Length: 244
Image 1 (cartoon, rainbow, N blue to C red):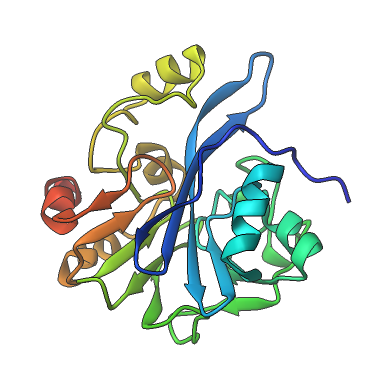
Image 2: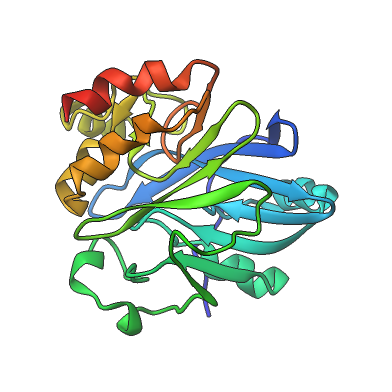
């Protein structure tokens, strides 16, 4: 199986005790590629690593990853992500986890593809009752045309790992192409502490599920798109969530 290539990315950084974060590149095809940034989160339990929002790393990045431990699990929470999950299964024999009802489909056709017809099948279909390979963590499912997961970790004063739901693009960064910056700004993505506009349109989530995030106690958010939010996250996201 051929895997998408590694695109430019930064270093693997520890942002909380046992929690690591990498920012790199996402690319959308077409006559002219649109590039913007995306993030991957890594949890360490002893020498066992769990990747959330996978992103293929280059050789230098993989060496950094291997120094942390062994990738045993890859958890897919974002219904429109998962392109690099198969790479980590192939390289490390990692177990793949995905939210029940999601499909591994090319591009943004997920809403039209049944899970059993996707090009890849996970080892575990997750529900809110599934025991995760992350300490003190549970899955929150946001219902919609394309189901979306959030991981809530009940330590570090509360941590949410988000797919496309909670974003934090205050400004564009070095992983944006010129066209990517123009398009994403026009579409309303470049706003701090935002609910993803493209996700709202494409996934058609249950907005009550999103508003219920404010019932949780969380101080930090690690989004798949935008800058990590360490400290005060709940109040920073409150206005965007309440606007729903």
